[in-house]
Amino acid sequence: MSAEAITVEDLGRQLGDRITQLPEYERFEEARTAVENDDAVQEKIDEFEGLRQEFMAAQQTGQATQTGLNEVQRVQEELHSMPKMAEYLDAQEELTDRLEAVNQAISEPLSVDFGGEAGGCCHD
Image 1 (cartoon, helix red, strand yellow):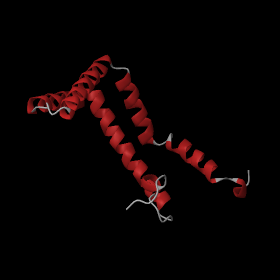
Image 2: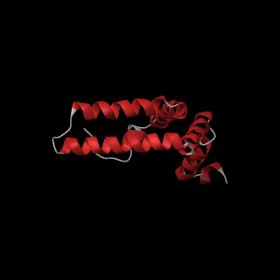
Image 3: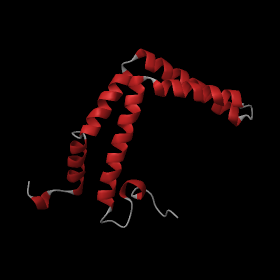
């Protein structure tokens, strides 16, 4: 395939393939798999999500309390302090930073933030 025959979509696929080879992406995938396969972490995620949803429902009905918020925050801190979850969150942040740098490189020659606004219209 000559350089002229390569489409923007082809370049996008190539970029996606290259991103999956980044050390940051590989670290993130390993951390994600570790979190998904750890029963204790999954139980804590379920506990946190349940409490968070209960609190959000209480907020909508005006019945939310500081005690409820404190409980959600306590369980979230417990979840985030679990070693596999902490590694996952750190790897996710590192990958996000790297992808933001890629977004900036793509957006540099454009008059729009590629990742932030290319899909939208008429942002103020």
